[in-house]
Length: 616
Image 1 (cartoon, rainbow, N blue to C red):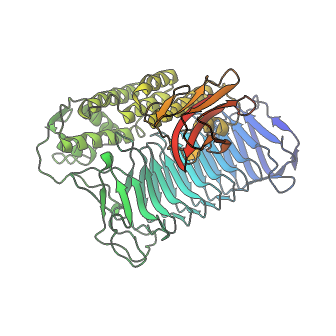
Image 2: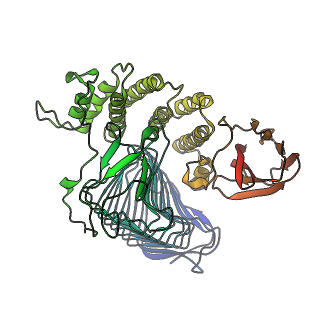
Image 3: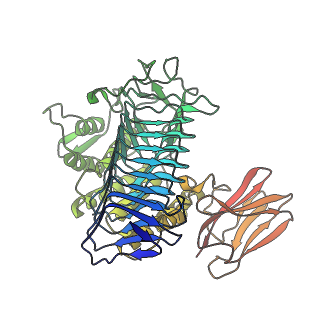
């Protein structure tokens, strides 16, 4: 048995460290075992890591930084802030977790960067998340995993287009939120369940692609939820056709089988097939605005059809070949011609040939060839496309982005991807009559971030912020903060709790970590020190709160209002009643820790204005 009475750092000069057939006891709030590179391997086998009292003592537990090879097998991690805290880099092999239990921690397993393979393991009764994956950039997989009765999420997975993950024979249940997927990646889920969670079974945000077969999502308020914007490239996908999934909601007010924003392509009105799924206990096809409410791009409602709805839940024995993607165009319109290595073809024929099969030769192209050919499609000149051509351009671009997760990320391919993204950004600005395309800028910045061009990514986002509305500008602030954090990690310049650092970045309205705060006001960029006026009321922070005492000023009130300051986690840190026509509230360094805050003015139960405040 090893007793840990303080923070212990293992020498990075050790080539490898392994623990087996033993017990580690954390005795107090400072107990911590830290491992750091250039140690190449840390391994646990048949180990119990627990606290001296059988309850959480406030200590971090086991933290592993910049170690390439990590395995945990046949072990139990309990009663620490983190069961395992793995801070990786993008070139590290996937962490291996097998036959382990993570329970009664704050976060059971936290992985930052790289990927993870998790098999035959349980994540139970953690006070935040069972599995928490941040900034992932390699593929991950879960097999025969249970994540239940966690206070917040069963699985939270955020990553780039290279970090798609699979779940097979997994169970997520009785959490506040089931599975949350963020980023332009694919979640391939089969023979698994996410049931009886308070809010949703699975939620997609920021171009996530949900592919589900033989899954049970019943008993949640929302079985499948999509979160994104109404324009550009910021929507999500789902594939349910011939999926044999159980999508019944819990029957409470405001519950849905599918709800939110998902993308589909086709002629208007937009329709997507989702045959062989279960929507109602009594059987029957889904009814729009009763069983589901889904919007595609530009706020067009999406109709879901099921010509053969299931009346019972089918076990997971459906042949994989039955799972189909979205259906293509059915119109006979005339399309502009595009030129690729395959020759000159109508736009729709070129895209369908590349992504499906070359009818002339019978060739099915591999991912690398598709990437090359779609890059050529997108670098054609698009002049005043009609609505159907726009959908094919959009479809080609989205598929191109997904393929960036499959190709070799060398300098040549990165440059090709950047060229295509920049080209399509200019085209979108022209034919959508916008000064900036939000989605393309985000895509370019994320690709630059992934390839290690951190400063260029930050400069791109900063140069675009003045053209954004308030909500999108706040998201750019969050993204800049995260890229700065990735830069520090890459440079080895950070040795802190990465979760707290990452959460301090998360202040956008769409961030799952930001609570229910929404930007309001007149749509201007709510920078610190900027006065926003709504019906004679103004809210401002003067001066920028870096040098000490600052003031939050409210003027123009005709009746009492509530002034609330939220931290980046959405928690209330200050709340005061504002009663006079002109009020000044002083904020000192002692009241607020360094971080990003939202200041909200609320009157008669309705938000009046919100602005951002940064304390350093």
